[in-house]
Image 1: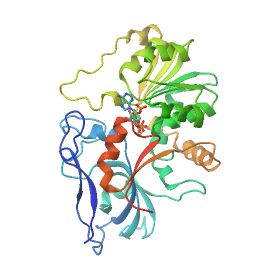
Image 2: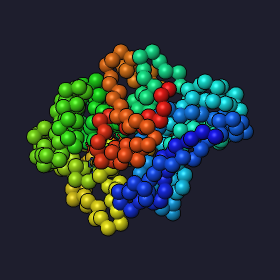
Image 3: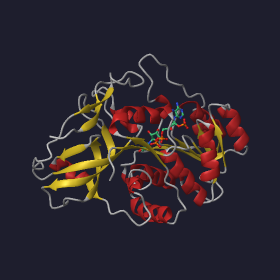
Image 4: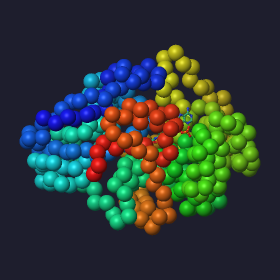
Length: 351
Ligand SMILES: NC(=O)c1ccc[n+]([C@@H]2O[C@H](COP(=O)([O-])OP(=O)(O)OC[C@H]3O[C@@H](n4cnc5c(N)ncnc54)[C@H](OP(=O)(O)O)[C@@H]3O)[C@@H](O)[C@H]2O)c1
């Protein structure tokens, strides 16, 4: 038996998850000498992605959603875990393969059941593309950004786009793609270091810090003629401000609402005041989930373009790494609080 530290989901949080009560790190042990499950395989894991959607799965299981609630007492389910196959009982993988496992436990070692084989892929990293890009720009995050921007936003050169949580995993991708496509790109971020990052390193046209400037003033200042597209990662007040600043026939890409994810049973959600703008301005306001067919149909194009752009250095895939399973709880909460610059990733072990 070896130690198998795992990021454990202990109980449904009410509001912000509390370390020790809702989340912890525990040893669940692993038998290295054991044969893999029938039709499955075993792995040593290197990286797990952190995603705000994980917070949505930490809920009362009676509340239905597009993905099942996590099970208390089990490891936290990550959108993607990257590891190396140790032993295999399936012809799809052999020992030594680097694999990307979707909807997989955040743990140091895994005995992977046959039922997970279908959602596991071998990764063959391209020259110049880091392994962690398969959790971000070339993973679910990048698919979200690339697919939804094109499918729902239908961007045209010269369009004015506002992106919230612009220095985060999805935001940094949407922004860089929009810059490449000749849009006027404005980002909203929660600190000045992030503002420098999006404008100086990612080439955004401009941006603002929503914690130090009134959102309504900032959007008016930076987009005096209005917005063609609002890429919404946060919901709440900025969505309201965007509604009042949209141009006629503008498009709102409803990607996420992170400003609400840690609302507890005693909090009053922000109430949108400017809803009537959707009708008056004939807006197209569309939500999506990355697994939807209309988003996934962009995958081949995303894979080709994004790997080429990372390899030639024209697209930055910035990671925010939390080192070691012992720090797994802090890394997760840090992402929800906005401590990350780029894609949040837990490094479990050296590849
Ligand atoms: N629809 C889909 O299929 C899909 C797929 C992936 C992600 N998403 C959504 O996309 C959004 C971004 O995800 P991500 O993975 O790229 O995360 P991320 O942006 O890397 O990290 C979350 C960021 O949200 C910001 N934030 C936290 N609390 C906030 C608040 N109260 N108001 C405004 N901003 C706040 C923080 O940045 P600041 O410091 O700038 O506040 C933080 O860094 C999330 O809403 C997520 O649920 C949706």
